[in-house]
Image (cartoon, rainbow, N blue to C red; front, top):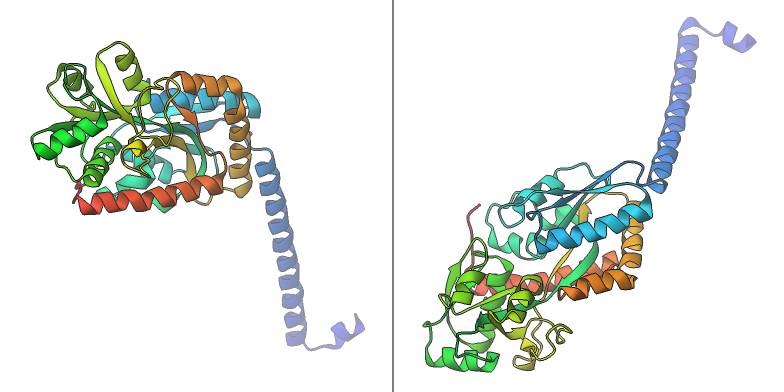
Amino acid sequence: MANFLTQSAGSRRDWVRTLTTMAGLAGMAGLALALTAGQARAQADYPNKPVKVIVPFPAGTSPDVVARLWAERLSQALGQPFVVDNRPGAATIVGAQAAATAPADGYTLLYTAQNTVSINPFVYKNLPYKADDFVPISQVAEVPLLLITSTKSNTRTLQEMIAQAKQNQGKFNFASFGIGQGTHVVMQRVLNAADIRMTHVPYRDGGMNDVIAGNVDFSFDASTTAIPQIKAGKLRALAVSSTRRLDALPDVPTIAESIPGFMSDSWTGVLVRRGAPREVIQKISSETAKILASESFQKRLSDVGLRTGLADPAEFARFIANESVVWSKVVRDNNISVEQ
């Protein structure tokens, strides 16, 4: 203190400023530690409020139904509502954009399908989001696609379809849910592999009714919607996109039985905006793994021709990366493009 008092006024002012700065830094450090501890507690307590689950499909569609089954079980496990918010439109773009601009805190999730991150980025020239805006959490369901035709058709197998189309290049046509949609791209991949050509007829609703009526020759559709019509005798299944046959349709061969190595299932699963806490991602994936292991959940999916997916985030991310290579090539080789 004596030394302090004998110092010049300028030195005393410098000393006071130094002490003040040090005190401020200590306070800031303490605040940072408090905030970090608070964030850690918030992540450990996740969720401590309702979680929004954006589903970019209309209510009642296959992705919406599975999303609600999953969200209901997650709500029971984690003690907070996981509330489905349907945002359909523009090949999942409307919902995906909403999720990509939400806070990266884990309280807005995106439950979507293949198109969002594996096909749209290659089809749309001005997409309002990027695939890497999202981090994969868990693939909840594998969605086998069935190659279908009317029961009025004289085509009974995939091999017959290929043979008939080779003899009549460009004569046959196929329906899809629209340019660049999964059912369009999958059919184009089959045509490329078989070296055949058909005319694409895009529909907003997929065109199943016109396939049933025989106005359109072929299409791909999800097992969830195709199986009831097949069992009702209105549609004939020529092949399934999975690596193995469906329990619900054991007599329907896989495409791979005619085109070795072929697998083009769709999927639905949950993603979150990049930057969400790692602990949140791990908690959701861990609980999802338990849901997928549940016999009751597996049965609910199996009843509509679906299979449980990949709960682990790293495995799901690798799956998306691998299939994106396949779909980008199909899109590029066939000049599939949409202005947006």
